[in-house]
Amino acid sequence: MNQPILNLKNHFCLTSQNEIQQICSPLFKHFNTTYFNFVRRYTDGSESCLTTDSKWTEFFYTERLYQKVLSDRYARSTSLIHRVKHIPWTQFSNSPVRLAQSKHFNTGIGSTIIFTRSNYADFFHFGTRNENIEMEERYANFPESLIQFAHYFYDKGRKLIENSTQKNNRLILTDRIVHKYEMPPKDNYFNLEKFTSESIPKNLCYILKERGKYICHKLK
Image 1 (cartoon, rainbow, N blue to C red):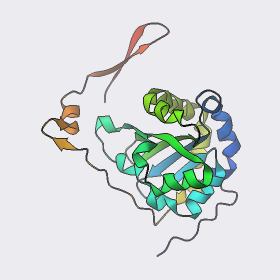
Image 2: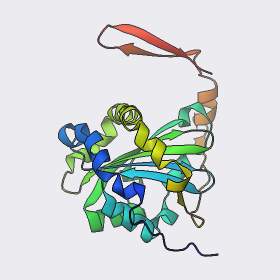
Image 3: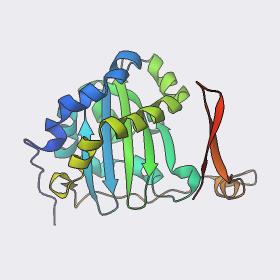
């Protein structure tokens, strides 16, 4: 059965645009980013969405571009190293989604952060206008800044995320193609899965810059 055309009039994913734009002020002011999109994609085919660009989001769903999304194939591995994934959009230069957003909405430079959970994955899409070519390198070189903003968004946008993930606000996409996770390349000198399994630390540590101290978290 064909998916009926989505009617997004007054849908929460569009009407929440102004609130999302307010949260994204640091991106707009200091990270030369003009577009942000949060998508929680469930394994059952449904998803929730929050965006700074309601026109592109409506275009994306009504044109059924969700059928051509490729990035979710990176979100299906339970390996530790794949729980957080950083994907510059240069990896998807021929993607129908990226080409459409670049052509119709002048946003073709960006990067995506993915956090994988047991029954869903969170996608944080960061983009900027095509003329901001210097950002192609900066998105690739500063993924830790994008990851920090993702956690900032979890905090500041908590209520909006809760609302967007309510059953009545989820987008039910019966014809969405859920891509299976693609195994990374392997050869005699490169095996990411074995490397990960043989180098798991007991604790994850990072330095708290302000105090010069190590903060450690035990891995479950």
